[in-house]
Image (cartoon, rainbow, N blue to C red; front, side, top):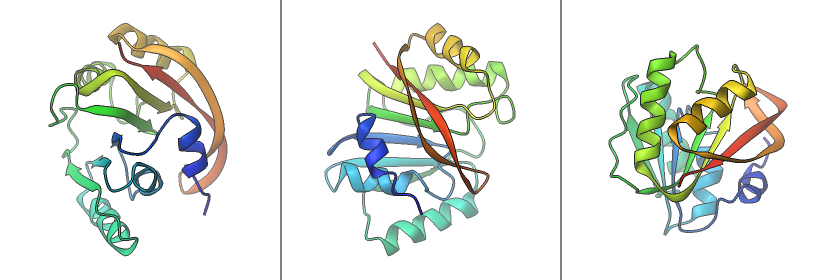
Length: 170
């Protein structure tokens, strides 16, 4: 298994932060991020699949991680977190037409903007959308593009080279 901690640290994730991993699946990114933010940080692991969230819960328990809060969305775009409460948002392999139509993505991005602290990092792994389309949709909501980072990621249970687009909130 790839060690993602180094990559996540390189994009700016650090101790004591509050992170939202939206569409977390079984926790391939949630677990390493929880290790980085440590006991004084928190990772909200959000997904629509109850069974997968149960697997993540078991993984977290087996690794002794107590800083992961699991949230089942039931497939919706509303995020039940307080305004300006999150330092980092991960949208890895979930931000595309397959899961959310344009109007749903717009609602999701508005929710992410609402819960993001000033200067929060929003990192998007855009596996099924054109780079300019992703940039345009995030910038329209008010996020500022800060760069692209290349790395190895998990896509359909395979390790592949890819990139993330990183944005900051105002």
